[in-house]
Amino acid sequence: MHVTGHEIDQLGRFYATPLGQMATRTLRARLSALWPLAPGASLLGLGYAMPYLRIWRDANDRTAACTYAGMGAARWPRHRPGLATVAEEDRLPFPDLSFDRVLMIHALEHAENARRALREAWRVLKDDGHLLIVAPSRTGWWAYAESTPFGHGHPYSPGQLNRLLGSVMLRVVRHDVGLFCPPLPWRGLIRGAGAWERAGRRFAPRLGGVVIIEATKDMYAAIPAGEGVPARRMVVGAEG
Image (tube, rainbow, N blue to C red):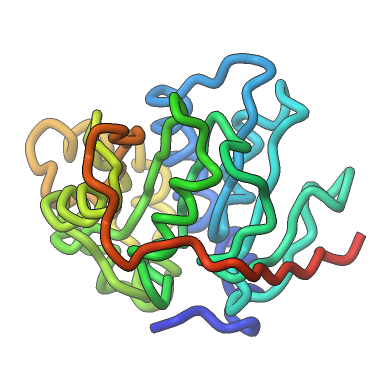
């Protein structure tokens, strides 16, 4: 299911619910532990990354967000709108080698062409940069919860993501999982999300709601045939 402009509003509404706030807290804790960002490093969030970018935004003025054209525009951050833009997934409005870090969340599973979206992320990533992907897990229960944004689009297994990244000159350097609390808006479950996370990581990692994979450019891989970057790019700035 490809995200439409109407559904970006649904994403915002989900993250305003207790269940969405729990998912935000849980994944923020995991992302900040996996990926501390040095001051001054540039970061791009692709897809619907805004709820998570504040991990790094508070200490970094070189953070930007870009939603895909099919998702619609978003205002971010609230206190200083204008750091979010909209673009085609394979035509990002940034020069080559622009960012030290690229975070993709609510992005790859909705891409019309996942390989082209990753190739474009590769293009704007610096040669020594890092890409972090958060995608719904094929074996987790969140992928089947259509009332959440993780229940839409194409879920992935770690093996599928490994092969996909390898096909576009990206080398996986770390795997992780997260979001073990069942996707139900029950207060008791939400209050116990931390316990679910600890138990799930230890005893049932396949039930994690998301797959988290970090990758770097594989500069020694052969350039994939037919995956050149399109010459034209379209961008629509979010209303400031």
